[in-house]
Image (tube, rainbow, N blue to C red; front, side, top):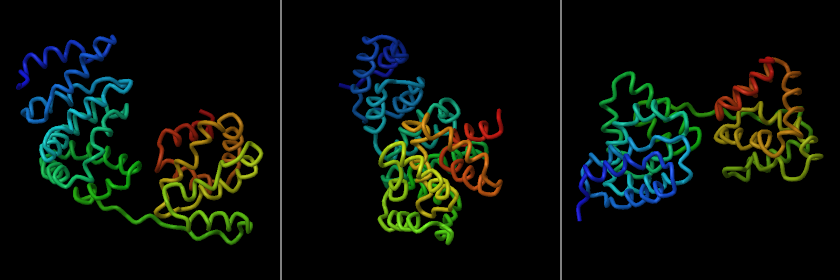
Length: 274
């Protein structure tokens, strides 16, 4: 049975703020009432429906509804709507989740790239800025950026400094050889507070390096400072950062900024006493 858009749309707008449990149930039912063979009016409405900064998991059904449509059409509509979508709610991280499959689906990617040719200069700037941020989280977006004409420079990889103590060199070499998503970040934070503090100078040395293909691990490497080591190590880390030479301090801050602007902003404010 075909869903009548006017009725479906009216019912959706009654509950899309997800204020009650009944609203949430009705919202999910409306999402799963779509088969993906409806016209693009529905698909556009689904994007309009992403309006809450916190959906408590209900948008999973919305995501499934979007990706039930033909892949090439999804790519076209997501490209067409990206500039407005990003401006409207991109700061709350609600946009990226709906675009995740694009780099790995040929039909969707082709539809996305073809439609992206219609972006105005301003729309392209907004869209590329969003995609560059997604690239920080997922290297698969490099393909998309290249197809959109964006040059991606190969990240530099520094040699291990000669002045490092032998234990640091060995641990770092072992991590680099191991490879994988946590190859270098995984050499830290394995035990307790005593080791965390002993490793802090080593950690700061690593944070000051250009890590080549492993540059994203700067984020996972510093996560503990904002979470379980926030009260034990983070204050000492900030103090040591203040005491570093401007050159080394800048290297660390630049590497952190590349992977996590929120961390960079907080550190900059603390260092400058803002």
